[in-house]
Structures are given as C-alpha cells and as structure tokens.
Image (cartoon, rainbow, N blue to C red; front, side, top):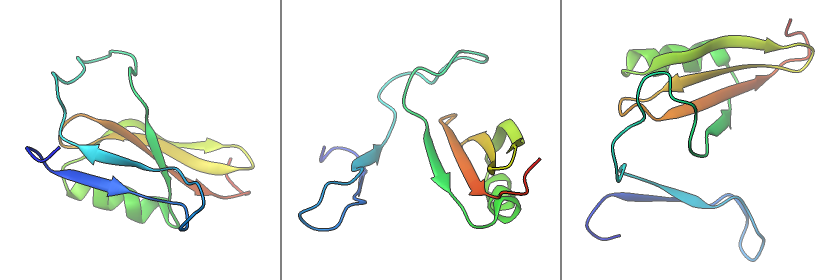
Length: 97
C-alpha cells in the first residue's frame, strides 16, 4: 500500500511460521461509542503492566476496560489508542487476584 504508512510485523524466525501482519491507517469511520468489537484486538504481553499503562495514558490513550485480574494467571486490560482502535496489554502474574 504505497499511498499510506504500512508497518509490517513478523514474529516467526526465518523459514518458520509466525503471527505476521501489519498496522495501517484506518480505511473507514471508527466504531461508535459502546459498539461491540468488530475486528481483531491485538493484545500484547508486557513485563510491567502499570508502567505500560502509564505510557499509554501519557501518550493520549484512554482506558476501555481497566486493569483486571485473571485470577492466578495475569493482569489484563484494554485501551483505546489516539484513533479509537482497541488494544490490550497482558502481564503474566500467578499472584493476580
């Protein structure tokens, strides 16, 4: 797509499959408030949930679903980026409750 920024992502090693894709500008209107999710939601593993959340908020993100304990497994939450796309962050933590 030469007419727009295109950020390719590759997670597999050479000659091995991975979860590959790209980030591009939205091609249509953003979802309206309280609309259900109508696309893939990328959730990223992080080492420090609170520090990552602080960076998200400092850079214009907004909470969609605040930090939630997945009891005995992890902390997880969802955020809107500056274009109202939803994404998640996930920090493994067996002590989450």
